[in-house]
Length: 105
Image 1 (cartoon, rainbow, N blue to C red):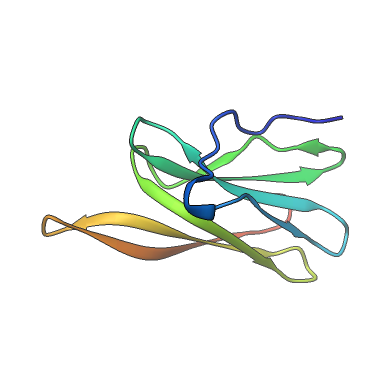
Image 2: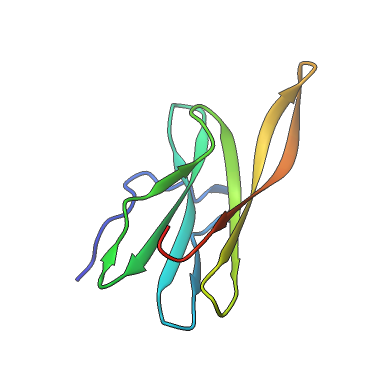
């Protein structure tokens, strides 16, 4: 049975959703999503016990976040990396951001 996680994914510039599995077979997906017009966000959701969790927003609205990547270990811990555009002294600068997801979160 399919479940919609996003109705506004940002697939521009070849940024498809990223999927990672832990040793127990639980899946986590991360993607870039269109939010406030002109901004994108990073969301992640876990598939545990036959259901997807409510997507978690990483960062704030509005923002320019894209290029999500996931990596995990056998304990189910995941690292989520993405690029975030920020303003520094009137210039847009791209930064690599990271968040860590632990089992059950």
